[in-house]
Image 1 (cartoon, each protein chain N blue to C red):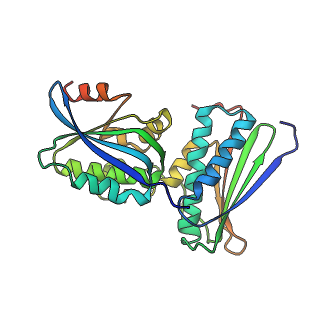
Image 2 (spheres, chains in turn orange, cyan):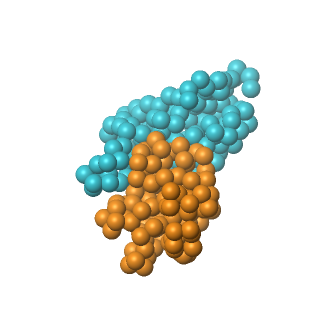
Length: 120
Length: 146
């Protein structure tokens, strides 16, 4: 049995204030997801400034996966990018809050609300 | 559930991904006992993290070594013990410092024990290099916490 792989899709969506890059995760996010998570981040266009993380199709997330999200946030912070997050289950919203990630990204229930938050 | 505990025992190889077998078995036991969905999600994360710690730190990812998981279903609580062959956990669940992580003064990883402690009603780590060390977690049916 293998760990279920992480699928990642990258999208650009138009919000009121302009284009936003959306990284959509699917499957599991674990220690085996480094290439999928950080590799996808490294492949973002140079001019991506506003990034949205979509967790709505994530089935399993553990602390190693959360650490990869933190590493992505560190890189984004160095590049002056803003990250917002949506689609986490209530349980993982609680976990993200417990570990303090919410100090560096805001959590939103859906894509529309998250997009709007960039312009708030 | 009557007063006689029902026990379920699993042995899983020290291979990342297999923690989900223990996690889902614990969730099934908790569901049968009548725990709420929120508590079941808490337990799933705690059990998965304990198994990953046992595989990585206790058994050094040696797939020939198994992680033992014992679920004891009592009248008003569910106890989960996760046993490995290591010398025991190095410390306890210190809360992560997100500022230090963001400034790369602390590793991004290393939140497992903190999450276990934060998500279950009782958590302890018992070091016993000769007979196998274990993490013990308990959730109570009549939980009064947050």
